[in-house]
Image 1 (tube, rainbow, N blue to C red):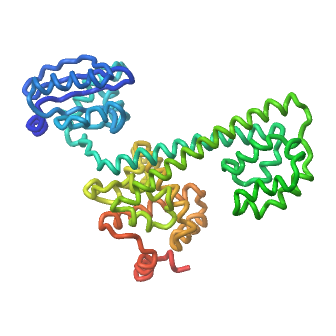
Image 2: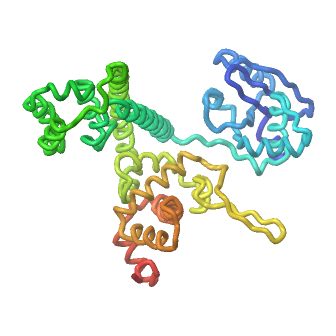
Image 3: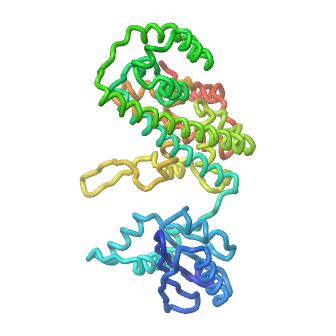
Length: 414
């Protein structure tokens, strides 16, 4: 408490909302607190902070339940403001301890956050922003993942619509969210229409795409000539083919947007100092390497052990004990997108790394499900990544295998 008071002239607990924020302010030399509401407008935030800074003539500590978001970005503009994020569940448990009745309102939450910061200063860590490049990359990779999820949902809707009247394209194409698939359906949205097309026209269409589209052309043309309609009821066909065309056009827009993101991510990532380090990790590729770099950042003092990263990413399980009972469960308080990135990469590494493939096979042999085996592999990978990241050394598979052999690792015994 005294240490905090020596660093800051004012302390603020803030309970955020979409349109307004409840704040509880305690000046450094006084115990009296003042609570009021500020609008979520740049002008209102500017006026509130300018007046407070002018009054206290010093740095200001602000504690709230976020580590990112509009209000955090607004506060980070000011060099005299230090943001202290608190996990929402931590504050909720503190509220339960202080108010067993379950009472809750925004002003009291702001004061509770302020109490936590002042009474347990070692439990709150100031937010230390990464470089502009890393923060930009982090936003880009998270937004890209959202677009990918949207595209998958759209593709599932498209698949469902085709099953109602025109299921054959689902057999002719393995990728149902590709530009080729969408262009084909826009051109021939029903079996009746594609059957009326000449074989030379269909061949010309696939030839324009090249690659596998050309190699499978003859097989697809034969399948089209042999196909039978699922239904001839126009009351079913006409509305569903309109929906299919609409969904395909939306998918094409999403595909183009993802390409734009890919270009921006790759340009930014390839110019970052740690790019080669994350590229060296087997199975990362152009999508996962930037995600892992964004997850760890460039500040080597941010994590002091592999366990800290494992906890941060939610890969280390939580053990609870009470009396004679002991149980292990999933870690809830973690960076879920980071966890997703590590797990997806671990799954890819199974086919790109010799030892990772062996480790996964051993886990499966023990009766683990695919997901449990991949999570265990991700947990193991973090220790290797941490060492590479801390020493700024790209990963070398042959070097790691040599170490395993020298240690007589049971992994290589088979």
